[in-house]
Image (cartoon, rainbow, N blue to C red; front, side, top):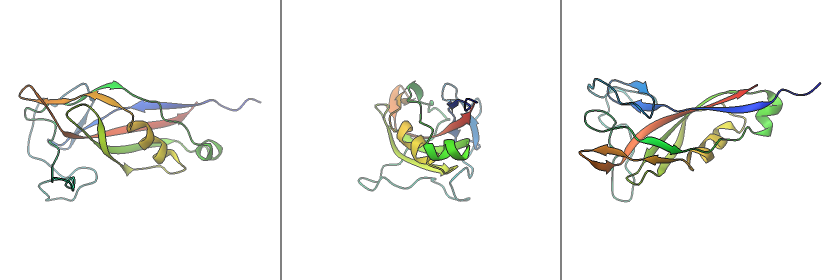
Length: 153
């Protein structure tokens, strides 16, 4: 009997730091509010990210005049052999910064599923290209979350 085909499904989300809501990368929230503790942050913290280290630059948050970046190019992540053998599937939540040129940086896993899928999600997301987020007509550095969904069919 032929083994079930494995296919990687990709679903993109952008963390709406205004109110902790999620929305697609092509949308922006209709209402903004104060930042609330979201995935990977500690409650009560004004900034939810760690400084770059080089010059202390912090990414902006989508909402309140800052548009979400728009995905222009994505790479399908590969199912790992280990995950395929163990029939592991699930969603990997990846956090990243999108710079003023639409390139991802500071890519890290917020919630993983293991079996090599976390690493493969990061490798794929590092190759994404975006139309940058905008504020006042100028491109800006923003922080977003991407949900990479691995499913076997």
